[in-house]
Length: 260
Image (cartoon, rainbow, N blue to C red):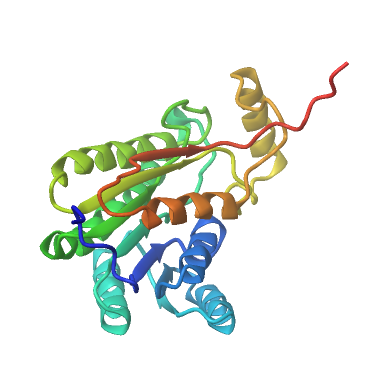
């Protein structure tokens, strides 16, 4: 006799920050596993393109506009996804961006924006989807963290404090959700090749890279691919019920060294 009823064969999923990078790759991976996916981001036109590509490959995907900094937008996103796909079984919170600046030089409004998008935006999603999961006694919530929580990096403004808050919230929820049948998991990417930071000009990127190298954060040139993180998310949510992979950190391997 199993300790838990198995996952439903069809698990409606919402992914925030799904217009590019890790969010896009995660939506594609979840859809490839046979689950319907609602892609949410401010760039809804890009989400439409991705959703169309998923459907062309035989998956079930829906694109919806979403601004996680707006509570009403989050409510509308979850409501529309639920109406179209069914009650949310998997929620992946990955919306956010990177602002390169020294904390003491960063405008407080910009700092607050980072916290509002990464941390409060994640809570807005949690508040909309987790109560229903608890009521149904099953569900997965995956928080996209960052290895800056374990090893803070300089010159990324509010990003380190915000991501630290996200992971602290996730760890707290793991205790609060114990015994409910709902799993909360952190997937913690290391350096990943996404659009984050790609628009920095040389005057910003140069000092950032110099400081990262000085503190030992630029040991080799290899970066993870978004699909590497998506595979980790897919693994976490596909584990049988009764098992909770609470934290997965994914780091790029260095290039192979010549051995004399």
